[in-house]
Image 1 (tube, rainbow, N blue to C red):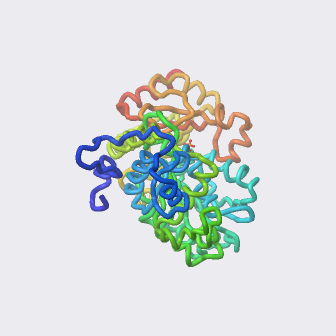
Image 2 (image 1 turned 30 degrees about the horizontal axis):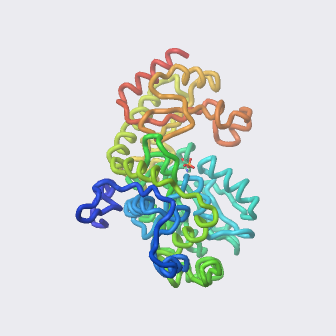
Image 3 (image 1 turned 90 degrees about the horizontal axis):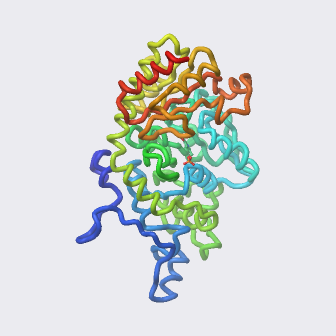
Length: 427
Ligand SMILES: *Cc1c(COP(=O)(O)O)cnc(C)c1O
């Protein structure tokens, strides 16, 4: 489908039924698959033949949906995971282990920050966090002999910082390591990081891809462009024989376009088993079929709400990357000329207490620990996810006490704005 526009890929990518086959992606609700002989099954276990044997590693429904996301991103191979967290973990752990080092933008999702700074640190992987605004020169200084990857988010959740993907890709490649981009907020409809030099893309499909709050899931896509074989000492897991698969060398058997995802499936899924259920994969696909249409509306509503907030003097500040004059507006125009996302962050004058009262007065947007849903929702981090912090700690973490994260859904922008107006009147 590579010649088609992204809209057509959203609707029809990944699945091409044959004569008399189901029009909609079938849900293969089966843990296992039948074979005529042990030797046929043995070939699968040695990765000599491709096929399914157990849904902890691979499932046909998941692979169909992963193939669609792969086409949307313009990659060569992809896999679904049980959550966005699992995708972030696998994307790094597939190429970094105990004793290794990774550089990450500091403007990333809080869950990812915790995964890197606490949990993966306990596994012996050291992370250096850098400002997304770091100069290329200073970024260069953060690389070490044991650095294995660079990580960042296209649009950071919840800071809404836009990453200069080309700057990070250049630095990563100069040092012989891949750039991994979490593209959850922009989605491939608004930004395709591979076109700007990124090597691996991850997603929380829980957000816009599913889009209806129905299933938690993740995805990893490989661009197939990073040549691991140039750095065999850095990436021995991909470039030397895997004893757990009869000495398969992933780059030799599957090429640079298939090695990374095959290893993540054959080793990490086999051993850790964070696979998405086929039911959820089916729901992600339903979401993907309208992703291009929905993203447009999410962005229109985001911009309309951001513009309104900017004009209301009861609001102390507004961050929306698509807003003219926003700090990252130049990067936005370059990387996401057609739109960003539906999430707007802002402060209500009167601080923490005013923010809480404002949110209690909203009738359409519900208070939820969620974003990127068809239904508008909002969160006051200072009284929810960051509740344990005092005002000083919040400011140090870049989450102001009055910050409201508002995720514009697919409702009418007029109704959303009136809802916000009324809630401000009621403070
Ligand atoms: C939500 C989110 C994640 C984590 O995804 P889950 O599906 O909740 O595990 C990762 N990255 C970003 C940008 C997110 O918004």
